[in-house]
Length: 284
Length: 294
Ligand SMILES: Nc1ncnc2c1ncn2[C@@H]1O[C@H](COP(=O)(O)OP(=O)(O)OP(=O)(O)O)[C@@H](O)[C@H]1O
Ligand SMILES: [Mg+2]
Image (cartoon, rainbow over the protein chains, first blue to last red):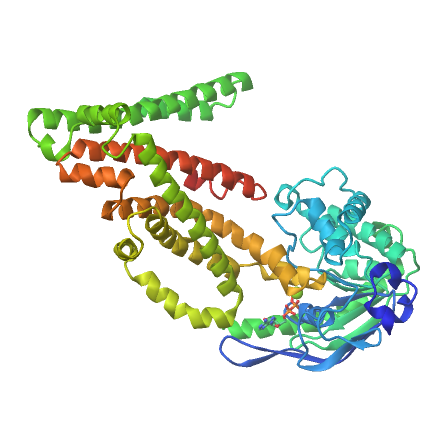
């Protein structure tokens, strides 16, 4: 119980259970500008084991980001609950890092200061935080870019900075919302390999949102398919490809990979069509 | 003009020219353009001041009311060599500048703080909103008279009027700046474990700062206007007083001379603010203010 509130460095020992995510009956309703109640997700139930890499796929607008927001504690569920470790999430959870769908680097801070934010906000002395940030920038291949501002970086570099900033606190839970969505294919593959490598080292539990089924299968232990809006869990696929996965570009061609990918697409296809019909219908 | 244009098109149409020639041609073109711009600028000045001089010389316009460039120059020289009845011109410039500066600093601090406070607190902004709009809608220059009556002829009421004018400019910008804060960034620091104070220090205030700094140019103009108007209303020293004295003795040339002095001061201050802006906002991509910086 007590180790839950401790700093990440001390967190590792009790990490086994502290990193379990349990989502039960999670429902989130929003008030639309017109004053109507809109149900974004409905009765989502999901468990992520400690150290597991879990991807969520689903049609656009089905409530994937909404689910993540409830797990992080940024928003409060309308019904149901999220537990991290043995604690029901109420307010920001300790030891959670979040890579947002939109760019969330501080434009007025240098790359180094952006990465340093995590430790600094936890009260780490400035010196230590600087050293740590430099080390992390080196690990994501951005040594020498410490003094640049975000607008002076390419899109891929910005994602690396965001990744370093998310991992520097050694989180037990890593939430990633389409982190590589806007990248070109080659950069994406490189980033995926880097992410896998860092994940193998730190072993946080990961909730990873993506629209890219290749990406989902290549990275994950488990892929969750969500229904169209209001979203709930439709299917869960266990990905039994051996670990370490090695280069994501190579395993794409293995038979088992293609088989799994095919199954997931079968499940997802209907939802995508339904979501499209719904928005097209609403527009008409 | 037309031949120049066709020439230009011509160099673009034939891609066979070698790069060195093209570069030289481009450079020559740019040089020519710059030359024309400067010729135009000088032309405008010659037409305006030459016309003014000519018309007053010919008597089409009465120089007794509208002054004359050569006489303005003489008045300017006189101001700097002989001084005024209220001490040397430098002394008077210094007084006015101090008033404007104090007003600028006080107004910026108050406006920035209150803008950030009201911008980040829904309850406070709902309560204070109507009052701020009411105060904003009254002609604030008139407050100068009240300050004069209440605080006498010293520097304080001038700085106060300048501060009031500056306050509203900065206030509305700071308020808007807080409202426009990127909610992604707020979510980001909150997940990292920031307290409300840390959210303010790391996100709200820095992003409001860009808006506040953007208001500095306008605010500076208002600070100088505030100080001058208050001096015209009643003072013992200052450029505003020189202007109102000159007005009383039907001396438009001295009024214009003071205007020249004020413009020079304002341009210099603008330049300094530009430097400040550049150093504070060096993190920003450079294209946004380009259009405004002509
Ligand atoms: N604050 C809010 N107020 C009202 N409606 C919201 C709010 N946030 C999200 N929604 C709605 O909830 C639904 C789910 O949104 P969400 O962002 O979770 O989708 P998503 O699955 O992440 O989609 P995408 O894949 O396009 O990112 C959408 O229809 C959206 O319009
Ligand atoms: Mg989303």
